[in-house]
Structures are given as structure tokens and as C-alpha cells.
Image: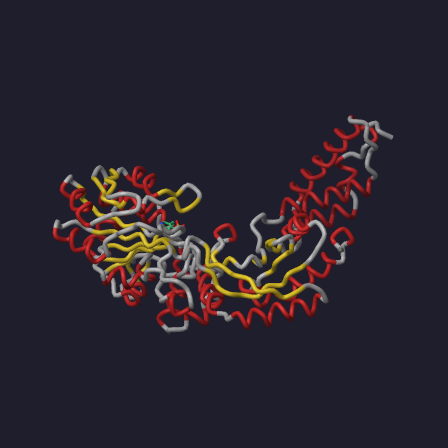
Length: 455
Ligand SMILES: *Cc1c(COP(=O)(O)O)cnc(C)c1O
């Protein structure tokens, strides 16, 4: 039977008890749309010579369309890749306290821009600002949408139509389409390149200043290293020179960290406090890289410059929302209470020992009843600490068709992101949250039983 005239009508399908349930779940208009969609497809199939679907099969398709349409496409995944700040997987997971803070302001009203003591209008960024001042010793602070916006805003407010001196060693591309020179152009600032790609001397900066630069910028080489025949003056020296000519120095730290990464067995990532102590007038960094908070761009530094930045029209366009400010404040309070390494997930992951990782990988292997625990390396990622890794132990699985297995893992519920090394599937416990262990092992158990993947 392939005549599309034999398909049931929309109305007759709407009368069925199955549809009553679906209407209760998803609402009538969407249910009607799903029926029409299923019938259209069946009609097209039949014109192509396929059999007409049965009534039950049509209803099942309507159910499937409704389920797919109403499922948010943004969903949690299990990160077993061992990359801690994985930009494509949402960078930093938040602490419990950050989540609770977001929830408390999300469900109702808040004093976002309201001064409770005077009953008058207040400032939204005041909430995180006072914490940032306390933590870094900066005179003033501002929180915006992300660090790219922070750079754009700073340059738009202070250097539009002016020359900005920046070293040729720092004209970096961070990822996606964020390139320091492009953002400068966007802000209306003019690039004054300093030095050579491997060597920059103080007198190169001096020359750029003599040629009319009105701001000196430094951008952290977040995701690459320059090695070999290289030279670059210390930040303190560049600051001294800029100040001698009454120019501000802006330091884009990228990740920026408040904690000393070397105490965690990692290389040195410049801290926000160091940069301020060196005399930088403005320092900007991300909220969701090593800080371990929500997506945000944070600017700290001298009040004189921040006051000008806050008044710029772009400040309003890139302002942080209340959920961000709530989560960021809660994250900053962890640093204030000296409990960051324990409470902030990215620091907990960084500080976990290889032995602890071995223990978890062993426990996975035992429950799964197969695999091998192997030495491996986790990385920080997210444009921080390039080439740096943390020793770890991973569960290694030998399966047939490893690439297909990886894909099936990504499409499982919840999706699991793993990697392959020498044709083995590697799962690193460092980036898997403790509470995800059992559901992950359940998915792996189901998957490894599929014949197609068995050795
Ligand atoms: C990551 C990074 C940025 C962009 O920060 P976002 O918060 O992702 O917008 C800018 N500059 C540097 C040096 C970075 O590393």
C-alpha cells in the first residue's frame, strides 16, 4: 500500500489516546506540527515508492519528533579527555557555592543595581568589584562579558584613533577569531608594532613611543611559546618606560591566575597580583580560565583609567549579567577564604595527584571488568600553560573500530568525550566529576557489550 491518500488524517491521529498524552506533555500546537511533519514525510516516502507506515509507526515518529524538538541542544557531557579547561566543553565547571549563588538570584529579584541602605540606584558591578579590590589590591575593577570584550572596551575607551605599542612577539591569535591585532583595529586603535618576532628590546618600545604611541599594551602568549634566540624586557621595565612618558600600560593576561601555578607542579603562569605589583595600570583576564568561575572578562587597575572605561557606551553593551556576577562573586569568595584549591573544580582537578587518578581508573576498570590502567598526561588547556601537562593514570580500552566507538560515546546519554592513543580508547579520571563515575561506567558497560566493538 503506497497510495498517500490512505494515510490517516491529522484529526484522526489527534483523537488517539497516545496523542492526548503527547499534547499534555508538549502542548497542542507543537503536537499538531509534529503530526503534519510525520505525515508530510510519509507522503514523500510513498511518492518515492516506499510503503506507507502503520498508524502505530506514525505515532512513534510523532513521539520521536516531539522528544527531539523539546530537548535542549545544550546539554551536560562527561569530559574524560583530561583537558581541564576545554573551551569547546564550556571551560570551567563551577563550584557548588557558585551554583547556589546563581540559583538564589535567578529565581527572584535581587539588589543587582539597588543600594539597600539608601534605597537608590546602585552599581551592578559593585558586587564583584569590592571582592576583586580586596583580592588583588587594585584601586578599581570592572566585570564585562568576557576577556575579548574587556580588551575591546579598554582600547575603545582609551586608544580610539591613537597608536598602541605592542610587541611583535605578542600579536597572538587566541582561538576562534580572536586575534589581538584584529581587536585593536575593531576598537579604532592603530597598531604600532614593536621589535621583531623573537627579540624585543626596551629601546624598540622607546622608539614606538617617540613615534607617537599613546598606550603600551602587553598580551600574554597564552597558547604558544617562543624558544631559542629570544629576548624581551621585564614588565617592570616596560611599565617604567611607559610611565616616564605618562602613558598607561595595559596587560592582557588571558587566563590570569590568582594562585601561583608552580606550587601545583606546573610552569609559571603570570599572576594578576604580580602584574599589578609591576605597575601595570590595567590588567584584564578571563573569568572562566584558571580563575575557575563563569564566563566573564575582568579588568582591575587604576581608578583614573577605569572611571573612563566605565563611562564608555560600549561598557553597557558588554556588561555582565546577574547570574555571572553571582557566580563570579561566589568564586572570588573561595579565594578570599583560602579554600580555592579545595572548592573550585579546576583547582581541585589540577591539584589531584597521579595516585588518586590511578585509584579512580582502577575502580572503573574493576567495575567494568576490562581494560588496563596506563600512565598518561592531562593538560590544563583553555589557552593556559601551553606544553604543560600533569601526570595521570587513564583507563585504556581495546575495542574494534575505536573511532566509531568514540563517536558512539559522544552520542550516548550522557555524552562522553574520550580520546584515542595508539588505537586505544583513553579515559582520564582527572576531568570526570566524582558524581559522574557510576553513570559513566554504566554507559561503558553497555557499549563494550556491543558485538561490533568486541575484539
Ligand atoms: C583567552 C584570551 C582572551 C580571550 O578571553 P575570553 O574570555 O575567551 O574572551 C584574550 N586574550 C588572551 C591573551 C587570552 O588568552
